[in-house]
Length: 499
Image 1: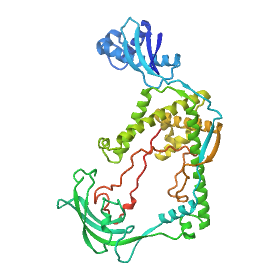
Image 2 (image 1 turned 30 degrees about the vertical axis):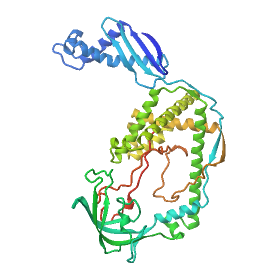
Image 3 (image 1 turned 45 degrees about the vertical axis):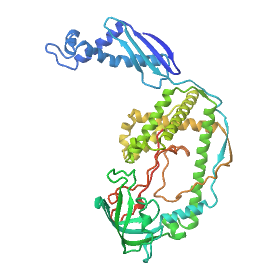
Image 4 (image 1 turned 180 degrees about the vertical axis):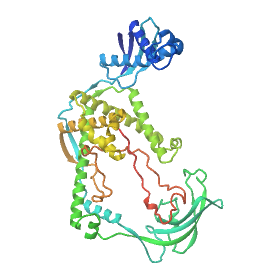
């Protein structure tokens, strides 16, 4: 086999392959024999029909097509191995010629990984702004924990004020007609700005339980029910009950509700958890500063095609998230901030490709790999998340796409750990902003468990530009008006992307 390589552009390799006529004909003959095994031909044992009979039955063009589907990948794989090509895309077949009795000719193109010139990546020195707890972090967390245990209790009749909770029934009328799903009974609402529909709860202020009155609002222009979007509506409201949130005292009883012996023990647990969060945050900062420093000292000319592919991937993630929230992506593209968001995704794509290339170069320079023992905990976690029994683990392990993702994640963790451990890290005061790490430190029901083999600081955060779910709560009755249910249960989740 004769192979010629030519470079085109930054990272494109053109491959000209010429295979001897005898070897090309042999591939054709093998395909004929395989096809003869698949059919019954009168007068011949299975697999013994001569080539001429097979050609009559299937036609030469189909046999060539079948032969090429195996021959081309085999030839290109041999070229990749023999020429030690580090390809990053599937081949693009430009042309080929397959005539029996003549050499087989093939022209294909690959994109190969750009060359990275690493700078000093071992023992790199970085200053890392150090995160620290603000004064009073434990007390603020205690207050949050108390508020989580708060309950709603009816109070004596008085006028509604902001911050109250009300129990009400309503009918929603548009153009004088009750809209579909526009009735609610026993709906609990918190009286605060932006709750339910714009301007709705504000009109409850000053009313008393037992009163019946109208609330006039407009559905938002972007309301997801296009039949109601932008239209004025009248809500016939029957205010049933006034409720007030009662927050328990911060004492030993509160501590016991969080499975702690006493308030002092609860405070100790909070302090311990907050200290762990600060430590994890500082590790994340160290990782980022070290990797950024290694990248800054490296040289690589990134092809536009790599950035564009990554950009398209990020934009597809964005589309999926928008549509998951029930919004039209085409409508979202018309919003004011879409152009700026798309540009930020382009820069994000460039940074992701740059970091990936540099870290990959370190992996190759250090000869790093991944063992089955390192992959195992990640595989077990995925199986646990999807309720897959241990006896089915092997099926997961046969999923090439999944295993490639896990391997890349483990390898990324290893190379980042390697760089951080080799670096000289100097923590300095954070002059830009004091870091406040807080959260329900002892809420066992909400506590998240880390990945089995993940070290602290490996979490990947969604970009700040990622769209967040809006305050709109849906149809007047269908989304909110479940008897006795509170709208407080709605939550917004920040989207996350798998690198």
